[in-house]
Each structure stands twice: as C-alpha cells, then as structure tokens.
Image (tube, rainbow, N blue to C red; front, side, top):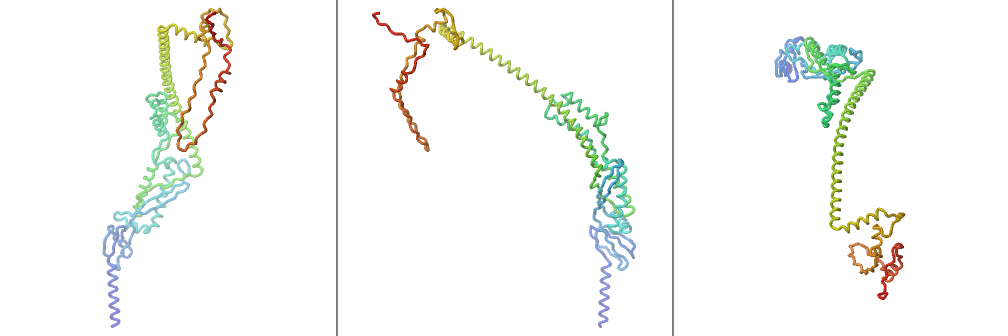
Length: 408
C-alpha cells in the first residue's frame, strides 16, 4: 500500500504543477511574451488571466511602466568650437503596440541592456546636434532678444511721467526708435545679433530620430527627452561672463541716457510751472500792496478831514521821531513852528507821581500735593515813598511853574 500511496501522491503533485503551469495572471503594469521552447510565439498586452500549454510554453513578464534614463556628455564642441557639458534625461517605455514587447524581449530583454542601447543611439545624436549648432542656440529654450526686451522695458519707464512719453517727447521718441531699429537688425548697431533659440527644436529632432531607431530595432520608445543640465567649461564661462558684463553696461548706458532726457524734461516743466506760480504770486503781492497803500492814504485823508489839529499833532511827533537823535543839533529861531510842542508848558511838565495803595494779595488755592511757599515780605509804605523822593528828575525837564501870589 505504501508504494501505491506514494505514486498517488506524486500523480496529484504532478497534476497540481501542471495545472499551475497551465495559466498565468498579468497585472496592469506588465506585458507578457509567451515563449515555446524558448522562442516567442505570442504576446499579451491587456491585464487578465491567460492559459498556457504546460511544460511547453512559458510566460516572460516585462515591466510596462515608464522608467528614467540619464546621460552625461562632456566637452562636446559646438559649431563655434566652444566645449559644453550636457546632462540629458529621458523617460522611456516598452512599445505598447503589437510586436513591441516581442521585439524588446528578443533585442534587449533587460533594462540594463536597454540603457546601453540608448547610450549608443541617443548620446550619439545629442553630440551630433551640439556640433551642428551655436552655443546660444543650444542653451536658449525661447527666443530672447535682449535688445528688444530693453527697448520694451524703456517704454514702460514713463508710465508715471506723461511728459516723458514718446508721443509727447520727440527726443525720447527718437532714442526709442533707434533702439527698436537696433533690436530688429534694421541698422548697424554695435550690439551683436542674438542667435536663434533652438534648444526645443534640437531636442524634438533628437527625440524623433532616436525613437525611429529604438522602435524598429529594440521595441521601446522615448516618451520625453530634456537637457537636464548645460554646464560651460571654465574658459567658455569666463568669456560668457565678460560678454554679459559688456551687454549690461551698454544697457545701463542706454537707460541712463533716456533717464537723463526724461529728467531734463521734468525739470523744464517744473521750472515753467514754478515761474508761472512765482509770477502769479508777485502779481498778487503787488496788488495787495497797492490796495494797502490806497487804504492807508484814504484812512489818513479821512482822519485829516475829521480832525486837522490832531493830524497836525501826529505829523509833528513823527517829525521829532525821525529828525531828533542823540547828536542832532538845530539852529533855528525860538518862534519856529517846529518848536511849538516843546514850548508848551503843559506838555513838557513832569508827570505828577501818584502813590498807589497796596492791596493785600489774594490767597491762592493749593493744589493737592503742592508745597506751600513762604510769603514774600512787603516793603513798608514809608520806605517806598522815601525811594520815590530820592529818584532824580530828568535833567532836560524844565522846572514846574510856580504860582505867584495874588498881590504881585
């Protein structure tokens, strides 16, 4: 019985293995190449469960996902014999069309061999494209005319200054037209003509030609290709830095030239506005002064007509104030009209002194927190009178008139 059980167990095991090898499951991220005795006979592109002839056919799983590839090309000369280092990056995938997985399996089979094929095909085309074009064309991705951008930027400088806009300022308009002509290459400017930006076209051409060879020979394709890094060699880097410095110095000179023209225009407008304001101010000042003089004359005339004697008295005081000084001497007769006021005893008599009564000071209310100050000592009235009597009378003042007795 034991040998029979062993045989039955072996038969069951063989049937299980045969059943297991009679089908396979394919995931969405895979493609399968069915081989018969090692030779590909069929391929499966859609996920699902498929049957095989056990022990005769086998399923070869291939990764259908998108994968990456990097390539570094060093010291590749451009058409100007300027060396440049290029790091390229690509995303590739097995050709999903019918026949692609089979061709990939037979031609390369593994990712490493696929990368080797890309190194020989794509890298060769990258180097050839770099040798055929100028350095600026390889580096630039978009058309960037620095002269045109500079001319465009200059026009936007005058948004806040209407007097500097080209449609109002002929000098600035002439400058901008000249810069536009240089940017468009219509006149012989000192600036060099910028090379065309061809990087996108170069990459697209490399991608097209490489894919044709990779699909036909190896069964996979590049979905996307880019120049990841573009590095200049030391000598090229120094040369480019010098060129950029010169170009920026030229741009700064143009900006300064247009800015100086705009500044001069603004100053001219300012001077004109200032002259208008100052002229209007001076005119108004003269008008006000004339009105003031007229009012003064009118008021004096009215005052003279109202009281001629008082007006004569004021004019006489003005004459004294303007004519008499410390060292002034007059030689005139005693009855001269100028001396009328000086000869009037009522005007030259000393003013009688009056003793003012002292009133007690009014007590001040104290503010909370304020310290009380000691009261000042009052001077006795007798002492004040004594001081007033000791004060000398003016030397020039005549003696007060004395009253004569009635009998004399």
